[in-house]
Length: 254
Image 1 (cartoon, helix red, strand yellow):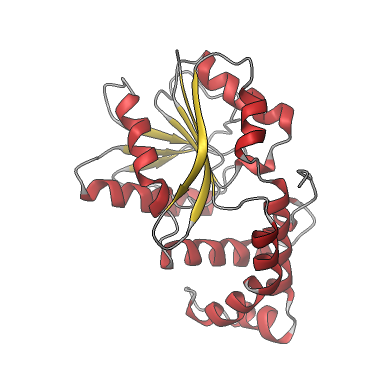
Image 2 (cartoon, helix red, strand yellow):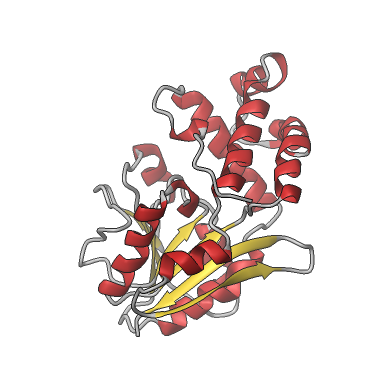
């Protein structure tokens, strides 16, 4: 199945911020409730173990509202792997910065492009469910920049480009939105309105999920992206006993 770079509503500046916030809230809620991050925990741990930074840290690129990075940090802390989390984004949102900054996490207020990470941000880099937003030439530059800067990088995508995933986005995701929306906090009457009365959110989230699958770089695509780049590369699928599966790509400087 050919990769297609279609639009996602979350990427469009014309979409009201309220709808974008509702979709982000839903995605975070589902990720945390279902612990979707579990399959990639050992892979993130490997990235940290390969780092030679004096202070263990992880540089998350394209963080948005934080995504599963916090969940990974908590899970790894349980087995004694502690690190500071640095959130970065091309367009930092003040509300995200306030909610994500704490004792073991910092959200940078300056714009950080994933292929031009400031020199003072040293440590393994991650992109969690965001790499598919990049066009091939942009994606390759991100991977190349990590090797040029001497930093390990991990690309992780919870979607995949398959008929099964596409059907799930069409048939299952709208139902999940309907059933899970009342559980999302903070409670919002407008969230209920645009889910049940005017069903903007089920349609918007299902479409974005469908397109995310079509945009996802599969291992064979990642092989093409890293062809000729310096460093050591590993690509494949990370899965758990529940069948939750992520596409991943790990890179280390040679």
